[in-house]
Length: 213
Ligand code: G6P
Ligand code: MG
Image (cartoon, rainbow, N blue to C red; front, side, top):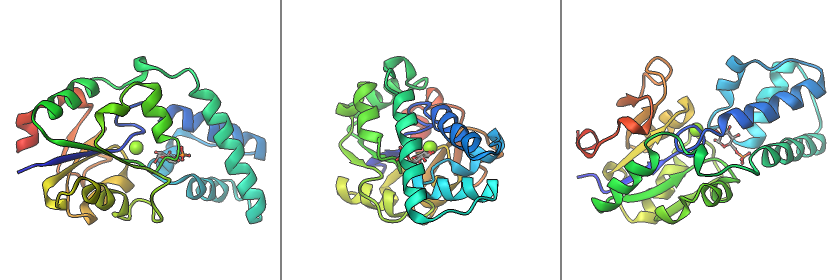
């Protein structure tokens, strides 16, 4: 039986991916190169510093660690500025309804995100109270595709990995869930997320029946 659902944040619950992209793009421009939407796929689910390293690799830029620290902070300041006015209207379709169904069915809910801004975002969109556990970028030492983030979620909820279902929009996140021994439902395109057990375009397609399968 399914006892818990673990949700990624960016791209599953809320469409912050566009704001991450805008901030990375601004940084790339400042460094003198272009950063395409296609390249941006590689940054989804990836931690802030790992994302910066991928960005610099794309631009062919090599920097010292202190400079990288500075740029990562700068990107985050821009990102935080972009999401200041985020509210309930940014919640992706079907999310609130599905979380409510899970609550009614007594299925536990956890967050499993690489973002250090996760709690602030959940607070802004008014969904923080729906979560029984929150595992975010401040709790983990190994980024997705490492299963750490999801295993910590299962542990916090006191359930077995085999009793969890993960919702993910990133390839790295789908791999992390598979490594954790969890059933994974991709949120996005079937082609990109072909390794997932099931794929929906948004949580609006989710029902308790589909979950039970
Ligand atoms: C999520 C997003 C990534 C982001 C990462 C770290 O996984 O998909 O695009 O880089 O979180 O987010 P943060 O808010 O800590 O910079
Ligand atoms: Mg994501």
